[in-house]
Image 1 (cartoon, each protein chain N blue to C red):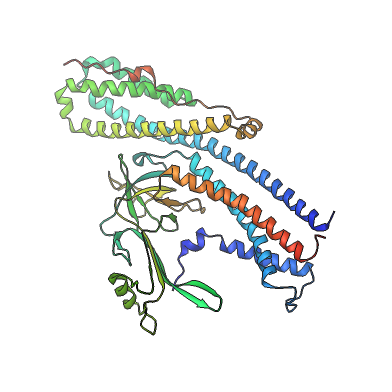
Image 2 (image 1 turned 45 degrees about the vertical axis):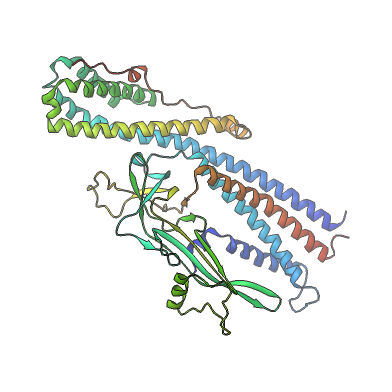
Length: 189
Length: 293
């Protein structure tokens, strides 16, 4: 075979090899990025959960003087906060987050029945801050779910599934809203 | 006259030239061709060498675009009010800061970023080319807002991918508009040849105007214009900017789907086009050196 043809074939093989290896490396790096993005987006939720948890004692102390009949809701909130502070796993934190969100929803809805509380400047400020955190939490939960969805799609698609299999990557759970949070809060006037 | 920085940053001319220079050197060394030996070292051979190493450069450029495409695909779009520090993807509408407004030089539009070029068609012998007489790029930080909030964006060092908003070519019987004539006169540039005919010139301008919809991937970091612990609603202590480790910073006025489509073509063009160019050029080089038969 002519030397020129050998060089051309060699070049084609080299380009193919570099191409395949480069493509596999890009899949690997991309999956690592996705896996870390999920961890990061959870950590970003955790930051807000902690911020909200720090606001809860102030909220409880500002409403307990008014909400004599909502003792159980306030106790539930205190208990859920303690659970959150003691939680070590993501699942435990997500569970207590769900309870706290539900209890907060009840408190803010029931506050409508207490005109003096509604007029309290401290309560208004706290409600504003906590509602702001709740909105950001909702966005970040959505972002987390998008990250998980991207990851799950990638590790189940061809050819990424081959690399994902070698990396022993498994599908991740999405952040689900608890059934109690989906229900409307009943307010009696 | 300064060369626009983004042209150098986003281009692949430098790696291509380096590859070409390295390649030419290697081939000259191996094939015992002396530069003065003009019988063998002609222009065609030089372009084949340039094509071979340029093709390899384009091949790797395709892979770098693949990495960026995957970053766009992997990163979900954040709502502006809940942006977290680090690499973020946001889309929204440009809301300029009142103190930071620019006027685009050629069309006099209010904007937060512009890039323009004035070129002249030149002929020398058989060859001709467009020579850049004047070009510049200017940007100011601006706010980007969606339905949840707004965030400051500093476009410095970003790869700004926007199409030309204005293109005009002057020539015989086609004088440039009055505003451009004024612009050229103010810079002592003539649009007429010594015989009084209009020169063949090309004017291009692109800009980001208020209310333009943008897609941004950048690093959310500390806002240097807000003092620590004084952030209020509407003046958040976050600014989207170029990351410290030279991470991806891209601004486009196209929606994400179209951006991805554009990147896909760059990847395909880079990887396949680069391979084809390199293989084709290598074939020419080998034929030239008589190594095929």
